[in-house]
Length: 265
Image: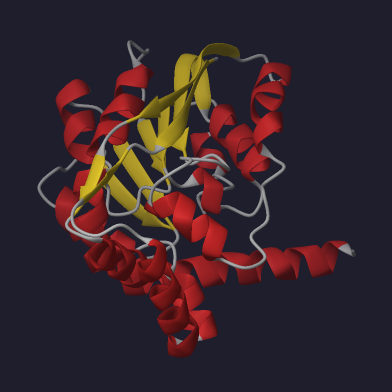
Protein backbone atom coordinates (compact mmCIF):
# COMPACT_ATOMS: atom_id res chain seq x y z
CA UNK A 1 0.00 0.00 0.00
CA UNK A 2 1.35 3.42 -0.92
CA UNK A 3 2.01 6.05 1.73
CA UNK A 4 -0.71 8.25 0.22
CA UNK A 5 -3.28 5.42 0.26
CA UNK A 6 -2.43 4.64 3.86
CA UNK A 7 -2.79 8.31 4.79
CA UNK A 8 -6.18 8.51 3.06
CA UNK A 9 -7.42 5.37 4.82
CA UNK A 10 -6.26 6.72 8.16
CA UNK A 11 -8.07 10.03 7.60
CA UNK A 12 -11.23 8.21 6.58
CA UNK A 13 -11.07 5.99 9.67
CA UNK A 14 -10.70 9.02 11.94
CA UNK A 15 -13.55 10.80 10.18
CA UNK A 16 -15.86 7.82 10.75
CA UNK A 17 -14.94 7.72 14.42
CA UNK A 18 -15.56 11.46 14.79
CA UNK A 19 -18.97 11.34 13.09
CA UNK A 20 -20.07 8.44 15.23
CA UNK A 21 -19.12 10.17 18.46
CA UNK A 22 -20.57 13.52 17.38
CA UNK A 23 -23.95 11.81 17.15
CA UNK A 24 -23.46 9.82 20.35
CA UNK A 25 -21.95 12.46 22.64
CA UNK A 26 -25.00 13.49 24.69
CA UNK A 27 -26.20 9.95 25.30
CA UNK A 28 -22.69 8.68 26.01
CA UNK A 29 -22.20 11.29 28.70
CA UNK A 30 -25.48 10.37 30.34
CA UNK A 31 -25.33 6.58 30.07
CA UNK A 32 -21.75 5.35 29.86
CA UNK A 33 -19.72 7.99 31.68
CA UNK A 34 -21.23 7.11 35.11
CA UNK A 35 -20.70 3.41 34.44
CA UNK A 36 -17.07 3.93 33.40
CA UNK A 37 -16.24 6.03 36.48
CA UNK A 38 -14.21 3.32 38.31
CA UNK A 39 -11.80 2.99 35.38
CA UNK A 40 -11.47 6.78 35.11
CA UNK A 41 -10.51 6.92 38.80
CA UNK A 42 -8.03 4.08 38.25
CA UNK A 43 -6.31 5.93 35.40
CA UNK A 44 -6.09 9.23 37.28
CA UNK A 45 -4.75 7.44 40.35
CA UNK A 46 -2.09 5.86 38.13
CA UNK A 47 -0.46 9.24 37.52
CA UNK A 48 0.67 9.34 41.14
CA UNK A 49 3.24 11.94 42.24
CA UNK A 50 4.75 13.77 39.28
CA UNK A 51 6.91 16.86 38.69
CA UNK A 52 5.48 20.24 37.77
CA UNK A 53 3.96 20.77 34.38
CA UNK A 54 0.70 20.29 32.46
CA UNK A 55 -1.53 17.23 32.56
CA UNK A 56 -2.65 16.11 29.11
CA UNK A 57 -5.74 13.99 28.37
CA UNK A 58 -5.80 12.66 24.79
CA UNK A 59 -9.14 11.19 23.66
CA UNK A 60 -10.82 13.08 26.50
CA UNK A 61 -14.36 12.62 25.17
CA UNK A 62 -16.70 14.60 27.39
CA UNK A 63 -13.81 14.94 29.91
CA UNK A 64 -14.96 12.77 32.83
CA UNK A 65 -11.35 12.81 34.08
CA UNK A 66 -11.47 16.54 34.71
CA UNK A 67 -13.05 16.67 38.18
CA UNK A 68 -10.59 14.15 39.60
CA UNK A 69 -7.63 15.84 37.92
CA UNK A 70 -8.62 19.25 39.29
CA UNK A 71 -8.83 17.78 42.79
CA UNK A 72 -5.50 15.97 42.51
CA UNK A 73 -3.56 18.67 40.66
CA UNK A 74 -4.92 22.07 41.74
CA UNK A 75 -3.41 25.03 39.91
CA UNK A 76 -2.05 22.93 37.07
CA UNK A 77 -2.62 23.50 33.40
CA UNK A 78 -4.84 20.66 32.15
CA UNK A 79 -5.62 20.05 28.48
CA UNK A 80 -8.06 17.62 26.88
CA UNK A 81 -7.92 16.68 23.20
CA UNK A 82 -10.64 14.96 21.21
CA UNK A 83 -11.49 14.56 17.54
CA UNK A 84 -15.27 14.75 17.97
CA UNK A 85 -16.87 18.19 17.88
CA UNK A 86 -19.84 16.83 19.85
CA UNK A 87 -17.60 15.50 22.61
CA UNK A 88 -15.54 18.70 22.68
CA UNK A 89 -18.65 20.84 23.10
CA UNK A 90 -19.66 18.95 26.25
CA UNK A 91 -16.07 18.87 27.52
CA UNK A 92 -15.81 22.65 27.16
CA UNK A 93 -19.05 23.08 29.09
CA UNK A 94 -17.57 20.90 31.84
CA UNK A 95 -14.38 22.99 31.87
CA UNK A 96 -16.03 26.41 31.57
CA UNK A 97 -15.38 27.46 35.17
CA UNK A 98 -11.76 26.29 35.22
CA UNK A 99 -9.46 28.93 33.71
CA UNK A 100 -6.43 26.61 33.70
CA UNK A 101 -8.23 24.02 31.55
CA UNK A 102 -8.12 23.92 27.76
CA UNK A 103 -10.15 21.64 25.49
CA UNK A 104 -8.79 21.17 21.98
CA UNK A 105 -10.57 19.63 19.01
CA UNK A 106 -8.04 17.61 17.06
CA UNK A 107 -6.34 14.28 16.40
CA UNK A 108 -5.17 13.00 19.77
CA UNK A 109 -3.16 10.16 18.26
CA UNK A 110 -0.35 12.47 17.09
CA UNK A 111 0.28 15.27 19.55
CA UNK A 112 1.28 18.79 18.63
CA UNK A 113 5.02 19.47 19.17
CA UNK A 114 4.10 22.09 21.78
CA UNK A 115 3.62 19.23 24.26
CA UNK A 116 6.88 17.38 23.56
CA UNK A 117 8.85 16.59 26.74
CA UNK A 118 6.88 19.18 28.71
CA UNK A 119 4.03 17.34 30.43
CA UNK A 120 3.96 15.96 33.94
CA UNK A 121 1.27 13.41 33.11
CA UNK A 122 -0.68 11.98 30.23
CA UNK A 123 -3.97 10.21 31.02
CA UNK A 124 -6.25 8.45 28.55
CA UNK A 125 -9.32 6.31 29.22
CA UNK A 126 -11.06 4.19 26.57
CA UNK A 127 -9.70 6.10 23.59
CA UNK A 128 -6.68 4.05 22.58
CA UNK A 129 -8.58 1.10 21.07
CA UNK A 130 -10.43 3.43 18.69
CA UNK A 131 -7.33 4.92 17.07
CA UNK A 132 -5.94 3.74 13.72
CA UNK A 133 -2.39 3.05 15.02
CA UNK A 134 -2.52 2.59 18.81
CA UNK A 135 1.19 1.79 19.18
CA UNK A 136 2.14 5.04 17.42
CA UNK A 137 -0.31 6.95 19.60
CA UNK A 138 1.24 5.56 22.78
CA UNK A 139 4.68 6.55 21.51
CA UNK A 140 3.46 10.09 20.82
CA UNK A 141 1.85 10.33 24.27
CA UNK A 142 4.98 9.07 26.02
CA UNK A 143 7.03 11.60 24.06
CA UNK A 144 5.00 14.39 25.66
CA UNK A 145 6.34 13.53 29.12
CA UNK A 146 9.11 15.38 30.90
CA UNK A 147 11.57 13.36 33.05
CA UNK A 148 9.70 11.84 35.98
CA UNK A 149 6.32 12.19 34.24
CA UNK A 150 3.87 9.34 33.90
CA UNK A 151 1.64 7.96 31.17
CA UNK A 152 -1.50 6.26 32.52
CA UNK A 153 -3.65 4.53 29.90
CA UNK A 154 -6.79 2.44 30.30
CA UNK A 155 -8.29 0.76 27.26
CA UNK A 156 -10.54 -2.13 26.29
CA UNK A 157 -8.46 -5.13 25.21
CA UNK A 158 -9.51 -7.68 22.59
CA UNK A 159 -11.35 -9.77 25.22
CA UNK A 160 -13.13 -7.84 27.95
CA UNK A 161 -15.36 -10.61 29.27
CA UNK A 162 -16.44 -14.18 28.56
CA UNK A 163 -20.10 -13.71 29.46
CA UNK A 164 -21.92 -10.38 29.28
CA UNK A 165 -23.35 -7.90 26.78
CA UNK A 166 -19.95 -6.94 25.37
CA UNK A 167 -19.12 -10.61 24.80
CA UNK A 168 -22.49 -11.29 23.18
CA UNK A 169 -22.12 -8.35 20.81
CA UNK A 170 -18.64 -9.51 19.86
CA UNK A 171 -20.01 -12.90 18.88
CA UNK A 172 -22.84 -11.40 16.86
CA UNK A 173 -20.94 -8.74 14.93
CA UNK A 174 -19.75 -10.19 11.62
CA UNK A 175 -16.16 -9.91 10.50
CA UNK A 176 -14.86 -8.62 13.81
CA UNK A 177 -11.07 -8.75 13.72
CA UNK A 178 -8.92 -9.29 16.77
CA UNK A 179 -6.40 -6.44 17.16
CA UNK A 180 -2.77 -7.42 16.74
CA UNK A 181 -1.31 -4.29 18.34
CA UNK A 182 -1.85 -5.06 22.02
CA UNK A 183 1.24 -7.21 22.43
CA UNK A 184 3.40 -4.42 21.05
CA UNK A 185 2.43 -1.66 23.49
CA UNK A 186 4.79 -2.45 26.37
CA UNK A 187 7.74 -3.38 24.11
CA UNK A 188 7.30 -0.09 22.24
CA UNK A 189 7.31 1.88 25.50
CA UNK A 190 10.27 -0.07 26.89
CA UNK A 191 12.24 0.61 23.71
CA UNK A 192 11.67 4.32 24.34
CA UNK A 193 13.23 4.02 27.79
CA UNK A 194 10.02 3.82 29.79
CA UNK A 195 9.83 2.19 33.19
CA UNK A 196 6.65 0.10 33.22
CA UNK A 197 5.26 0.52 36.72
CA UNK A 198 1.92 -1.21 36.22
CA UNK A 199 0.46 -3.50 33.58
CA UNK A 200 -2.72 -5.14 34.81
CA UNK A 201 -6.35 -5.82 34.11
CA UNK A 202 -9.08 -4.29 36.26
CA UNK A 203 -12.70 -5.45 36.35
CA UNK A 204 -15.59 -3.53 37.88
CA UNK A 205 -19.32 -4.29 37.96
CA UNK A 206 -21.54 -2.58 35.42
CA UNK A 207 -25.34 -2.86 35.51
CA UNK A 208 -28.10 -2.24 32.97
CA UNK A 209 -31.85 -2.23 33.58
CA UNK A 210 -32.30 -4.82 30.85
CA UNK A 211 -30.73 -6.07 27.63
CA UNK A 212 -32.81 -3.76 25.44
CA UNK A 213 -31.67 -0.72 27.39
CA UNK A 214 -28.04 -1.72 27.02
CA UNK A 215 -28.31 -2.41 23.30
CA UNK A 216 -30.10 0.84 22.55
CA UNK A 217 -27.53 2.84 24.51
CA UNK A 218 -24.65 1.03 22.81
CA UNK A 219 -26.13 1.57 19.34
CA UNK A 220 -27.25 5.16 19.83
CA UNK A 221 -24.71 6.50 22.31
CA UNK A 222 -21.76 4.12 22.18
CA UNK A 223 -19.19 2.55 19.87
CA UNK A 224 -21.86 1.03 17.64
CA UNK A 225 -23.13 4.46 16.56
CA UNK A 226 -20.54 4.75 13.77
CA UNK A 227 -21.63 1.36 12.38
CA UNK A 228 -25.27 2.41 12.66
CA UNK A 229 -24.55 5.51 10.57
CA UNK A 230 -22.54 3.56 8.01
CA UNK A 231 -24.72 0.44 7.71
CA UNK A 232 -28.20 1.78 8.36
CA UNK A 233 -31.29 1.07 10.42
CA UNK A 234 -31.95 -2.38 8.94
CA UNK A 235 -28.56 -3.69 10.05
CA UNK A 236 -29.06 -2.35 13.59
CA UNK A 237 -32.62 -3.71 13.80
CA UNK A 238 -31.47 -7.20 12.77
CA UNK A 239 -28.56 -7.11 15.22
CA UNK A 240 -30.85 -5.93 18.00
CA UNK A 241 -33.30 -8.77 17.37
CA UNK A 242 -30.56 -11.41 17.49
CA UNK A 243 -28.99 -9.80 20.57
CA UNK A 244 -32.26 -9.82 22.52
CA UNK A 245 -32.97 -13.41 21.52
CA UNK A 246 -29.80 -14.54 23.25
CA UNK A 247 -29.67 -12.07 26.14
CA UNK A 248 -31.01 -12.82 29.64
CA UNK A 249 -34.14 -11.13 30.92
CA UNK A 250 -34.27 -8.49 33.63
CA UNK A 251 -31.41 -6.48 35.10
CA UNK A 252 -28.04 -7.42 33.65
CA UNK A 253 -24.86 -7.02 35.69
CA UNK A 254 -21.48 -7.95 34.27
CA UNK A 255 -17.80 -7.40 35.12
CA UNK A 256 -15.83 -6.27 32.06
CA UNK A 257 -12.05 -6.06 32.26
CA UNK A 258 -9.95 -3.18 30.99
CA UNK A 259 -6.15 -3.00 30.79
CA UNK A 260 -4.15 -0.38 32.69
CA UNK A 261 -0.61 0.53 31.67
CA UNK A 262 1.40 3.03 33.72
CA UNK A 263 4.78 4.06 32.31
CA UNK A 264 7.26 6.50 33.86
CA UNK A 265 9.79 8.49 31.86
